[in-house]
Image (cartoon, rainbow, N blue to C red):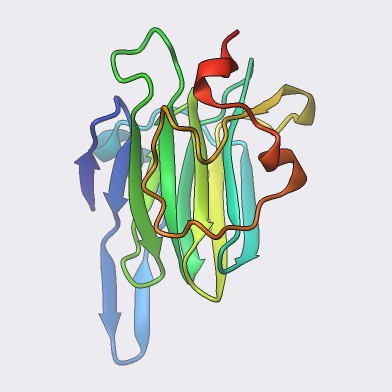
Length: 178
């Protein structure tokens, strides 16, 4: 597998080995030993999630306040533009983000360590999106940042997006830590 470091500390793009022929393909989507040794992911995963969304749906930018989750995210079918954003005011990369296309064709994964905000927008008619989490989801602990926060200035490939009511109410980064 190929591991690509990004501008954000600990955020990594992972390209698993894919073995294909006329019958289809095989890939290993996770191995604790390989991901520890080759990608430096030493946290245990305790919860797997799977979401299905239509084109233009934007989910995020989400995080948990006191029990942050690390997320290993990928696409089973379709494509998304996936984002990890640094929301820690003490970080030298505060306000920066990494964006990458994840698709069934490129097989890429994104490792989003605990403490970053995460979100994605669907680029295809339908997407099946999966993620492994290092902590349990707790609705009373969730937080978020506005998807169109001017401080983050994310270059989303779609701007006509569908948001949940909750995602529409999230503050910008400037107001997050007040």
